[in-house]
Picture 1 (tube, rainbow over the protein chains, first blue to last red):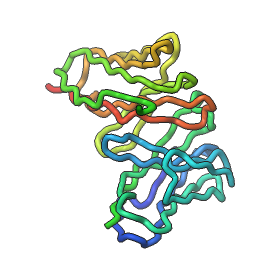
Picture 2 (picture 1 turned 30 degrees about the horizontal axis):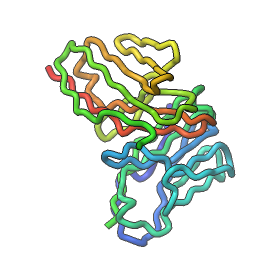
Picture 3 (picture 1 turned 180 degrees about the vertical axis):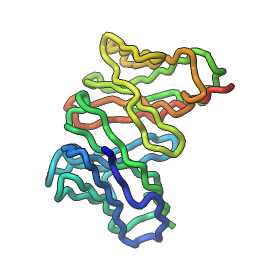
Length: 115
Length: 110
């Protein structure tokens, strides 16, 4: 089954403790992206990647890191999480970076709480 | 001003009603437009793309007005299963970044 898999689904952590949210897609998609969703603000892009070893900042990259060493994986790293990073996170992938040609496929989401 | 603005609702309509949502965008160079649907606590899913000439998919009709920089979604004969949040999405001029509206919440009542 074609899908985007994120783990974990739920994560509660403390300020400053490094964490990684994994994202993997099995559709051989070139484009991958991370979003956070907060009430009243909608989905905001954190980072995106157009292919292996190519990553770019989105609208809200501060406090986050990503890597794209393999085509299928795009982990999101929070080196020192803070409470303002409490949010619902979505990973998404698309066949190409030309959004008019192919839709975004989203993972199930990761609900992160930083205390 | 937000790049993509939607009326958050909530819209509560009876089954069988026709409901319309509008969305405005600020970047006149935007190239592509979409409606995504998001059920409670779930991931967004593409509902339909929006083409310049307008397009229809069953009970759903999407329209684009470039001059006024807004897009619309019309749902006819609403079903209970249409209850969801509808996200307006706009693509930047380079085709690489999508900007999402904060969504319009629809509840269809029996």
